[in-house]
Each structure stands twice: as structure tokens, then as C-alpha cells.
Image (cartoon, rainbow, N blue to C red; front, top):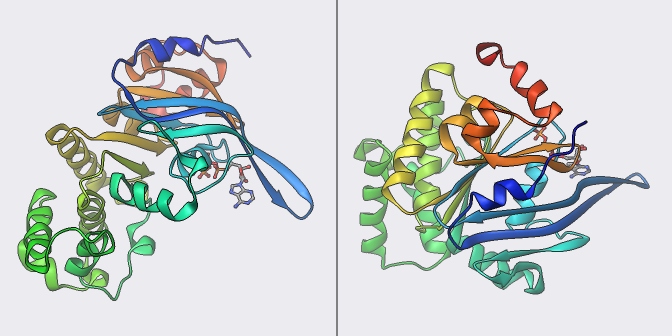
Length: 271
Ligand SMILES: Nc1ncnc2c1ncn2[C@@H]1O[C@H](COP(=O)(O)OP(=O)(O)OP(=O)(O)O)[C@@H](O)[C@H]1O
């Protein structure tokens, strides 16, 4: 495969980093075997920037996202969040800090949200955990959040299990926004949704991002999702970032052989 200059993408990034990962190595151990999931990966995300991670299944996208979020300790390398070395911190202060400043939106809201809870309880929960506001302020904040993701106020008392997939992903987004994070990490945010609602959720994520100074890390194997939502893209292959640069450039002029293969496999984007 052709060698690609990975410093290229770094030049295109101007603002101070919110996340900075340097030379990460992550190994999984199972049944006496070591599986290297990240092999010397470096990536930084600027305040307010949207970065996409793309690559085939097993390439290490989720592992990188989870390592950035303080959930998997790398065997080598460093992650800083707004200048603080995450893995030099003990786990409790690390989770507390990230819980206030970074939120996750999962692939399938039906399995990530408790079906028995009401919509209001789900959105309020991070505020309670982080002890943000009084009871009355939390109630007002939940109402404002539901409105900001286009959900009617009366859904607040509905159980989560009564909602459609698209409505649930809106709830997940409202919950993620509750703590006013600096970054949202969205792991395949639309892949569990009907095609008809995927575009609505992508629009909503874009709108929400534009109205706050929110950084975004989007994990997807779908170049169309990455193209729509992100400014820069890191292409992952076999635990490494093989290409990094502006999303438009990667889409229009992929340099790495693997990126070309990835783009060619999307029927509507065949060149
Ligand atoms: N908990 C785990 N234990 C052992 N191996 C794991 C674990 N999680 C991931 N792996 C392995 O690490 C590698 C990277 O997996 P990862 O889930 O990060 O890839 P991915 O690009 O996000 O894939 P997908 O798109 O399927 O989610 C794969 O080889 C995977 O099998």
C-alpha cells in the first residue's frame, strides 16, 4: 500500500485541541492471545471541530473512541483532554471530568437507554449525577432540551419503550447535550435507524453542533455519514490511521489505496 503523509491532516487543524491522543497502543487479551487493536495511533480534535473515524469492522474505530473517553487504558501513549493527561488521573476524577465535558451517543438507543424509564428521567439523569442545578432548574432544562431536539413537551412522561427509533435517538441526543459538553462522541449514530429517519437525525446533529461550539467525533463505516457531519476524517485500517485530512479532500482525492477501496465500495459514490 502507498505511504501517506499523516502530518498533512494536522496542518488543516487550527484551534486548540480538546482531545489529543499521542502514539496510542491498545491490546486486548483473550484466551491467552494478544490482539493489538490500536497500533501507534495519534489524533487530535480541536475545540468545535467535527472529526470522523471511518474504516471497516474491526479496524479499531470504537477502541480509539473509547480510549479517548478514558474507558480503555492504553499500554503505551497518552491522551490529554483540554491539556490534562487522562490516564495520569485516577478513574473516578477522570470519569467525573469527562462526564461533565464529553457525552456519548450510541448506535442503538433501544439498547443503550433503559426502556422502563420515562423520557424525562433519561434526559435528567446526567444532570442529577453531575449535581447540576436545583430540581426546578433541571425540570426546565429537560423541557428546553426536548424542544431543542424537536420533541414535543408531552413526551416527557412517556416511557422510553413507547418511542420510535428516530424519537429515541433524539432523546439520546438531548441526554448527551444535558451537561453542555464540549464534545459529543457518536458511534454509528444512524445505523440502527430506518433510512427515512437517518437524514433527519444527521440534520439534527449538524444543527445542534452549529448552534453550540461543540466538537464532534463520529465513528462510522459509512462515508456518507462522515461526509455530511465532519470537517476532518481519519481512515482506520487494521489498528492504524492510514490517512488523515479534510473530509472533502479524502472524499474527492483519496491518497491511500485502502481509502479508495472503501469509497469504491459505496455504490452511490462510485467514481
Ligand atoms: N472487548 C474486546 N476483547 C477482545 N478483542 C476486542 C474487544 N473489543 C474489540 N476487540 C478487537 O479489537 C479490534 C478492533 O475492534 P473495534 O471494535 O475497535 O473495531 P471497529 O472498527 O470499531 O469495528 P466495528 O465497526 O465492528 O465496531 C478487533 O479485532 C476486535 O475484534
